[in-house]
Amino acid sequence: MNKIWIIFEKEVVDSLRDYRSWATGLFWALFGPLMMGGVLIMIGSSVREDIEQPLNLPVQNPQNAPNLIQFLEQHDVIVEPAPADPKAAVRQGDVNVVLIIPEEYGEDFSSGKSATVQLVMDSSRQSASPDVGRIQGLLRGYSTYLGTLRLVVRGVSPEVIHVVTVEKLDVATPQSRATVLISFLPYFIIFAIFNGAAPIITDTTAGERERQSLEPLLINPVPRRSFVLGKLMAAFPFSLASLAITLIGFGIVFNILPVEEYLGVRISLTIRTLIAIFLICLPVVFLASAIQMLVASFARSTKEAGTYLPFIALVPSLPGLALAFFPVKPELWTMLIPTFGQQIMINQFMRAEAFSLSNALISTLMTIVISALITLIAIRLYSREQIVIRKS
Amino acid sequence: MIEVQGLTKSFGKVKAVQSISFSAFDGQITGLLGPNGAGKSTTLRLLYTLLEPDSGFARIDGFDVREAPIEVQTRIGVLSDAQGLYPRLTARENIRYFGRLHDLNGGDLETQMDQLIALLDMEAIADRKTEGFSSGERLKVAIARALIHDPRNVLLDEPTNGLDVKSTRAMRQFIRRLRDSGKCILLTSHIMQEVAALCDQIVIISNGVVSAQGSPADLLERTGKNNLEDAFIEAIGSEEGLA
Image (cartoon, rainbow over all chains, first blue to last red; front, top):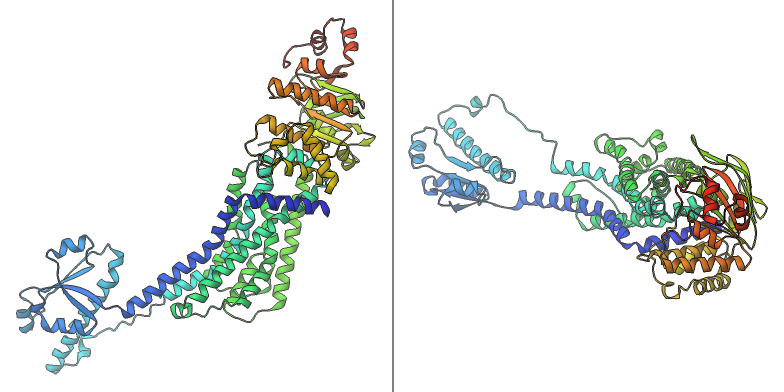
C-alpha cells in the first residue's frame, strides 16, 4: 500500500511538471462547453434577427410602383436606392438582393396585364437566402392580395384560383436541431473524463518504456500490481479535474445564456444537478483510466499510444449518437453498459426528469466491476516478462 | 554472493543461454566476457529477475530468483543496459524515488544520497532536472539510484559502454572501491582490456555457454598463452564481436 502511494505521488508530481500536456488537456475539457456555447449564441442571434430586424432592400426605379413600395414599407422593409450596377453588386456580395421595377410596370399594371418586376440574386450564396426568401414571400403576398381584390371586384370568389392549398408543417426548426446538439452534452462529459486521463496514462506506461526507464524501475522490490495500481491512480486526479472543469464550463454556459428562450426546451444545470452528474460519473474515471492503461501498455512509444487512445475515447460516443437520434428509455439493459447508462442519467438530470436510484446503483456497480477486470488484465500483462523485452 | 547453476533460457527457437554455471564471491569483481550476442545480458536479466529461467537456478545471497524475487531485488543494485531517467525530475528526485521504493526514507535516505552524490562527484548537478544531462551525467544518476539502498551485490551491464577515457577511468576506480568495501560485483563486457584490468575472476561466454572460467592466472595456465587477450581468443575460438 505504501509503495502504491510512493508511485502515485511520483507520477502526479512528474505529470504536473509536464505543464504542456495538462494545459492541452485543460483546453480539451473546455472544448465541449465552448462549442456548445458558441452554437447556442449563433442560434439565439439568428432567432432574434429574423423577428426583429427590418430588411434593407435596394430598389431600382421605386417611383414606377408607389403602391408596391408602400406595401413593402408596411411590412418592415426599408427601401434604399439601388446601386448603379445591381448585377455586379449582387455578384460581388455587396448587397444580398436588388429589386428592379421596369418602366412598363405602371402601364401593364393599369391595363390589368401581369406586371413584371425583377429580383437580382445569387442562389449560390447561402447567407443571402433568408433575405431573398423574405422578399419573394412579400412580393407573392402582394400579388395574391391584389389578385384577390380584382376577382372580388369582378364578382368571382377568390377560392376559384386556390385549387389546392398547401400548408407547411416544418418540424426542423433551428430549435430542434439544437436539441440534437444538446443530446451530445452527456458524451462531451464522458469524453472529458477519458481525455483528462490520457496524457498521464500515456506518459507513465508507453512513455516509461520509450525513455528506457521501465526496466530499471521494475528491478525495484515492489510487486508488479503496485506499479499498475499506483500509475492507474495517478491518472485519477487529472481525469477528475477534467470532468470538473467541463461541468463548470457547461454550468456557466447554460446559466448565462437564456437557453430556454433560444430553444424552447428547459435545460437545468443548477449546482445540485452538476454535483449529481459529477457523482454519477465517478466510476467512469476508473474505467477510462483502466482501459486506456491497458491499451497504452501495448504501445512501444508515446506516439503509438497517441494513435490508439483517441479512438478509445470515441467509442463511448456511439451510444451517445444513438441517444441523439432515437429516444432511449432508461431501461435496465442500458444501465449495464458502462458510459451508456451514465449518459442516459445525465440526460435525465439535465431535463429534471425523475430518476431511479437503483439504476444509478446498477450502472455504478457494473462500471466498477468491468474496470476492475480490466485492471486485473493490466496487472497480468505487467507480470509477464514480455513487458520489458519488447523494446521501442 | 551469486550462485548460478545450469541456467537456461530460450526465446522461441533461439537458445540465448544454455546451462550456464558460475559463482561470484563477495569482495571480488567477476567479469562475464563474451562477444556481442553471447548471452551476457540475458544472464544478467535472469539474475535481476526480469526474465524467468526455463531451467536451472540462480541464487543471490541464498535467495532463489524465481521463488523469492522481492528478497533478491532488495539485495542487488543493477545498472542495466536501459538507463532511462525521468527528465522532469531533478537528479536527487530520481535517486530519492528509487530509495523510497527500497523502503528507505527520511534522514537515512538523505544521508545515503548525500554520500553517493559526494562519492560520484555530482554535487553540481544534483538539484538540476535531468533533461539535457550528458551521457556521463546520466550514468552517474543511474549508478546512484542503483546503489541507494547499499546492496551487497552489484550487477553492471557493460558499465563503461559509450564513456570517454576520463569517465571510463573514473568508472573503473569506482568499481574497485565498491569491491574494496566487500561487495560482490558482477559485470559484463565485450572489451578484453577492461576485463583484464578489472576482474578478479573471469567467466567467458560464447554462444550461450561458458567456455572457460577462473582467475586471470588460471586462464593463462589453462590455455598455455602468455597474455590474457590470446587466452580469451583461444577460449572463445574466435575474435569476432570482441574489442
